[in-house]
Picture 1 (tube, rainbow, N blue to C red):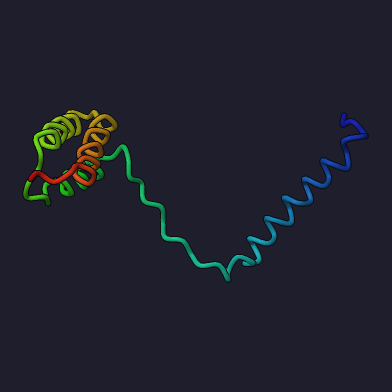
Picture 2 (cartoon, rainbow, N blue to C red):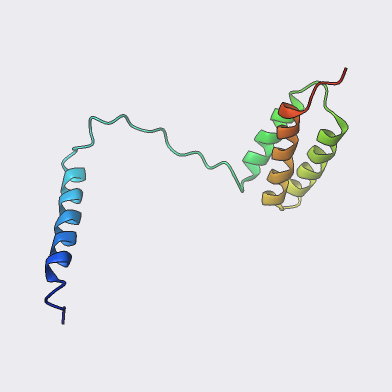
Length: 102
C-alpha cells in the first residue's frame, strides 16, 4: 500500500500534526495576545456605507472625487459592490494624495 521508503516521512508528518493539535488543545498558545476578530472590509454594503461616510466627512471635494463618489455610491446601491468599493477607494486615495487647490 505505502512505499516503504516513504513510511518514515509520513510517520513524521503525522506525528508533527498530532503534536501541534495537542499543543493547541493544551493551551500552549495562552501566553500569546489574543488578536481582535478579523473585520471583513470588502464586498459588503456596510463597507460601501463606511467609505461613503469617509468621503462625505470632507467639506471640500475636488470634481474627480465627486465623480468617483457618485459612481461608487450608485454601483453599491445597484448591487455592484466590488466595483463600487473600487470607485470609493479611488476617491479616498485622491483625497489623501491630491495637492490642495491654491
